[in-house]
Length: 180
Ligand code: SF4
Image 1: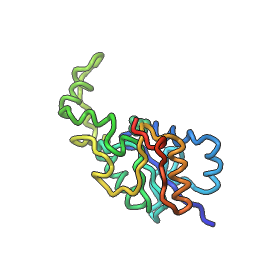
Image 2: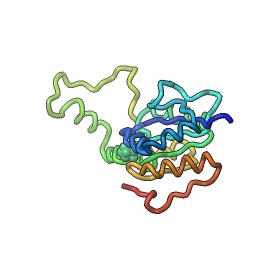
Image 3: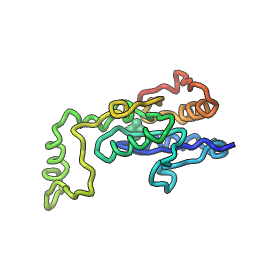
Image 4: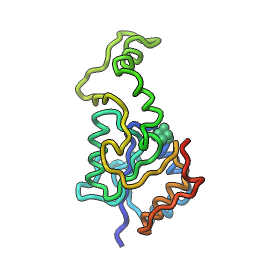
């Protein structure tokens, strides 16, 4: 039987959701029997298979142009797309910058902050442009499932994946539905 294929990525995230996923500990061996990992920080694959895969897990909100590109790639190539963690659901802590004009953020980071020498806002065209604010995933693409929490508990990842692998709806018991 062909294995289920999973891709993961971190947009404007901190990789903490990926770490919590790895907190399923030895169950990762059980998972490895059932799934293959496609594009992910855990693999060296650079793009989601253009032929399409089964499940995409996305941590982090959308803060720059590259995030938009990656999220659209995941949406177009993953049959089921999951928003993982507070950042993906609502923008999370990075969205605190939404209250501050972008120019002020740049000035504080690159022009006036402590210890800055040769102040200059980076403008190399290779760098992705920041968006006007940090967006949750659902404001950019359609999302099929959500895992709340900062980060979601490892058992929530386990329930989500084992349910999807079994073809049933995930049921997050109350302790697995946290928002902190
Ligand atoms: S939800 Fe929390 S743990 Fe996950 S990427 Fe955002 S800040 Fe990190």
